[in-house]
Image (cartoon, rainbow, N blue to C red; front, side, top):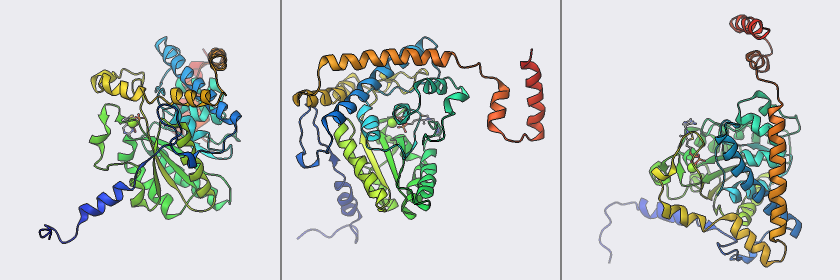
Amino acid sequence: MASKAKYRFDVSAQLDTIEKEFQTFQILNEDGEIVNEQAVPDLTDEQLQELMRRMVYTRILDQRSISLNRQGRLGFYAPTAGQEASQIGSHFALEKEDFLLPGYRDVPQIIWHGLPLYKAFLWSRGHYQGIQVSKDLNIFPPQIIIGAQYVQTAGIALGLKKNGKKAVAVTYTGDGGTSQGDFYEGINFAGAFKVPAIFIVQNNGFAISTPREKQTAAKTLAQKAVAAGIYGVQVDGMDPLAVYVAVREARERAINGEGPTLIETLCYRYGPHTMSGDDPTRYRSKELDNEWEKKDPLVRFRKYLESKGIWNEEMEEQVIEQAKEEIQQAVKQADAAPKQKVTDLIEIMNEELPSNLKEQYEIYKEKESK
Ligand SMILES: Cc1ncc(C[n+]2csc(CCOP(=O)(O)OP(=O)(O)O)c2C)c(N)n1
Ligand SMILES: [Mg+2]
């Protein structure tokens, strides 16, 4: 017979049971082999090629953005390499009518949603034209305030529901974002009102230099969904097919009135936190980097497509060339934007000016006319 338990109610077994339920969902392993046959999505060869094309393009965009930043030709930049399956795989599951609320690292998703590349560069430079987009483009500017987009997403999703729209609001944050109050408020509200929202947490293991283990006692970030009474999924964030399926099904559920889903994607950022002086070698080991690079989303997806005979070096070269060419053109277009004036900022932010701003506006108008 077991010895008398120290406590009458075994809370520890209860927590264990819940945590064990959150297993990592995977379809394609590191070697590009299908390990979960019944979960393989119904994507045509053309769609699979397009998904690969977007991931390769995004990797090149990241490399070029880093160089442009070093040359002083871009402003703020948060590297994306290593997160392509998580970013592009998730976006691939969405439709044009869906609303996207990105974080600062999620520029690729809004580009693939339709933001012209040169506007992404202008946003990076802090130019107001970078966030002026056509009305039919359902995107928000990348959020810098950690977690704030989670609350906004719950609100937008409620709007979609009230207006009877067959669309979802999708947002992204990082592992660190789930330690923020806004994160809990957002998922709680979304659960209470059963709104069509998808909350994606890209768990790249670090919030700048703070390891994920130090940010929370939760064993998985997906299980945070339980407290809000919403669905939670943990997925291999280096596997584009698994991410695609997790998001596609979350979208289906949301549209069918079944409410929101929280999706944790396990991934890694190869580069620094941002280009503003972060040195990852001070908080990450070479061994850890190597371990994650073996899981690379492009490598495994390339192997998978090659094994199906639908991808080759020549196709990849073509994508790389096209990306380089388009990036070069977009930089030129961004360079051609008019120099930003202080009066521009005042004008675009206000329909009517309060007296103090009116005064400043006149002062700047005078200065700028010289
Ligand atoms: C409210 C708020 N607090 C702090 C910061 C400073 N900050 C910028 S990025 C970051 C870490 C975020 O890490 P994570 O959510 O894991 O996203 P990742 O950068 O890894 O994609 C912090 C603390 C901020 N931008 N906003
Ligand atoms: Mg992180």
